[in-house]
Length: 578
Image (cartoon, rainbow, N blue to C red; front, side, top):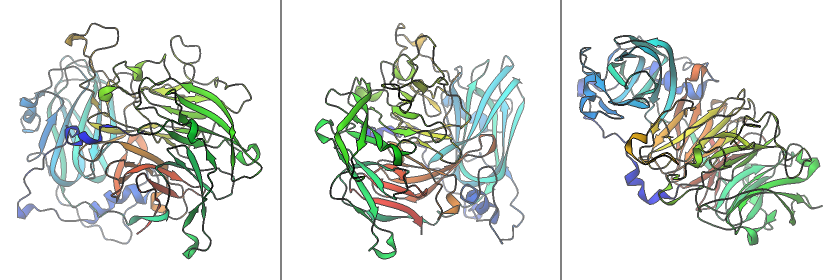
């Protein structure tokens, strides 16, 4: 489940940027209606269709100027020359001294309403390049705004990205994925005007249930019963049901008798235990379901169980092991299981298996001959025992690839979630020592994505990954190329937490501002963010709630309402209006 390096948070914040000097009084930010509209776009619009703040006159925005003069710059390498890329002199340049992957990050001295970014290329020889522009919104997260894929670029050329509508940001990151030369820039310009970030949206956590023991997931059965099923790590699944006697019917009670108790066969705890439950389509008729857990041999087990004649009790003796995944260590054992809303197949999150120092020394994330470090997709409802491989899986009949793999290059995808309306898949992946990330797979995907671990961690190179398995271990073999990878769409560094958890796409009836927003959180700090994707990869993340409890997961009910699971206090809270 979570990253065990919690105690080392202070050492993890390698990308945290120290605060710069404040603006002089005459240049202090002032709020504008345009700024409020831009920062509210994530919450007030469906994907790609921002909505301005209603009934508020929009004054002429302040003049747009290049705002990098007092910013702090942090490059992937070549720090001594980094200021040459923001000094206003086209004859000077920053050069990383390395081939891609490389990045250049600008931490502005405050929030600015930005409408344009200009990138002046330093490149020899000319040729095709791929760059990405990432924006930070002040909440600590960065999100992918645009990919710049060019068949030909040359030295001195200017790439211009228009930010439409203007966005209130405090950080810009330019990531170079491919280039025929070393990663370098003559000038990076960010045009905007000072502004204040809009206040946090009016959302809060409303307690609805308590008394659970180390809950790690929350699911519904899709059977119209209104029940919720809370997974307790030690090996029990408890039923939650609305308490009609409570005020407004908002609170939930926890049944005294577990729905399922297999604690005698579950190895717990740390990052092991009972992980998840998944109900197949038409569960009301089938009356069987699936669970994932760690057994006493250390394997991750996917098993099928059946309900009894009492729909609130399952038969613990009915378990049939469908799949067992060998685990080399006690960390990063994965365990998230979900049925795809469009294809009805079972998706399984499998971590890289962990290791001392948590850096995947056997490179399982990039080894498709193993089930580790992957999202698996299998057909458990076809009648084929123990399961069938969907013919449309990307690596069927590909030598040295496991047929079950749907996507790979993952460290510990704990909390991935489907958008029930679109079929898109969001995959939070727990980072190592620097970055936590959210990956995205559109519903049109045919699978096969490589999400980068352990070559990359978030948008950056994983600098401590060592040598390629089977290669001589010397510096010449230390490579970091993002070619062929699918980049994350959002990330945050360990100054804000220790392990990303998720996740649910809000499709409930009560909070129209959150429609289509993917919700994720951090296990250590409890902040809860919302992420929305727009057209042409224009992603936007925003801090929604500053919680103060360890969050193990975010779940949803059949109506699409979203709940936050408190791991230590055993409390389930619903996201509601302030």
